[in-house]
Image (tube, rainbow over all chains, first blue to last red; front, side, top):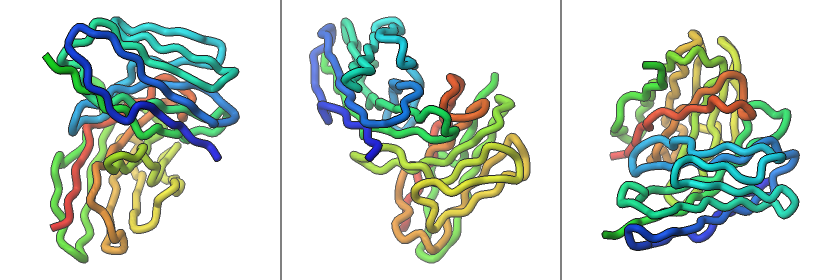
Length: 113
Length: 114
């Protein structure tokens, strides 16, 4: 079954601290993996997109890693800010199957002052 | 500015009533999608369209209908047959499909049954 599983389900950290979110997937054939940030009541916004040949990609304080062999990805947030409080969604797309994305259930991050 | 616009932001539906959610994009994208988001669950695909006048059912199409008469517009109707319509609905568009990098989401419509 094609699935994307994220952990933890929720996370609370203090402002300025780092954190890492996990994503495991069983989607095949794999095309790319994306991380999105979704603020409450808003649409998801893309942070990073990686193909199977890429194993790390950064976007400011966000760094995503991908291990296509173990089918795992992580999103590392450095020096967290209050504005990082949001849901982070891992999304995997099929190769050669237009329109099909598999979404994880998201990790809700709360950054406290 | 190019983007994808959903309206209204909030919508209330009475039992037995059909309602239509609007989605408009000026990105010149060919493909458009509708997703449903429920708490604690991943987004689920309702319908998608890759070209004008053509659309395909997604994973949870029952109780929903769509049309694609113009490239820019992909409205979603939630019919009275949808027994649990309260959810957050997201529209998205892309240049040609899920594998491209231009996948863009709207800001969503929250539908509540009253």
